[in-house]
Image (tube, rainbow, N blue to C red):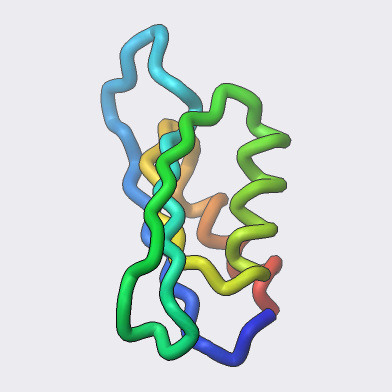
Length: 85
């Protein structure tokens, strides 16, 4: 994992529709100095394992991650804390 600060923000979707994804995630990639955004990708996840795997990889790679999900924010915060320690 990079020595840079990685920001992970989690928003809980309170009233998801029946066809809503499990999570919508935005990944932000910066230039080498982290002074300029190079790319933002948004992905919708319907599979919990794929979602967890991709977020873990992004955090390890040093991308900022913004998550909007119907999953428990508390549980996700604990998992991300565990992944990054």
